[in-house]
Image (tube, rainbow, N blue to C red; front, side, top):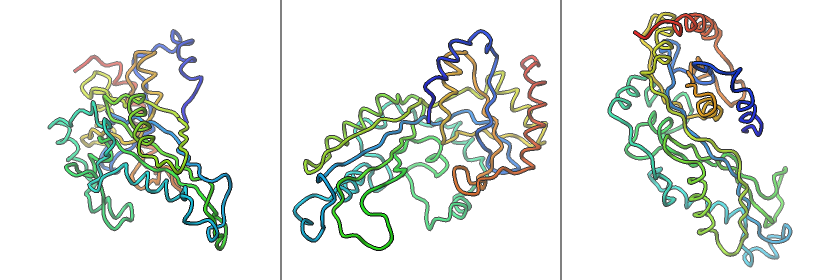
Length: 303
């Protein structure tokens, strides 16, 4: 949800928190045989939309057809954000997005999760995404506009024939390196206000935001992490771009001047943010060994 006090805490305690690197394990790996160092995270902006229509819920038989339904208006409004091929149509939304390098695309192709396995894991009939990018690239290195929740009208058992007075949607946009949250928020909100029909009133409530994070996998600390993973797992680690966001790592860099080593051991089937979320005990044991090896490797001179 973001923290209103953590940045000031870092500023006030900067001297005693001085460090060479920060280790965060809130990331994952493709499977138990592919240890991973995550070198990039997507950023985020969050906000909530509300469309207000009549002053109260109305009888849909008596008034339906004469007033715009906020739930329908919100559905139509959100449908105009994305094109058929998965690309966001908001003008300026992709400004500043750097293309993936050939090296990065080769690294992402090393990951073991095939499109078919991903489809089966997620339980979907077919994968969907922006044309010209693989599913792995889409979920880790491309910006998104996601509807996290929709609320309007009667939700109880049975039916209640109304035109609801309002409709709300919770939205997040995932951002990639070089996108500025404040600018993306502005172009998104400007577009929504422009296309909002005059029959309803639009209200936008801003939430938290954070820039994407990018660290060089060639840095001495990153190389130390890769050596620790390699020794623990006895396998060659892979490099990941993670689709999620950890906003505090940017403050660690800005305030403390320290890069964050993202050494997570969560598996795709661990159901992150879902019911029955879990953590594999073998991965937990590997994490303990990797941590012990990492402290040693961080003290070694660059090789």
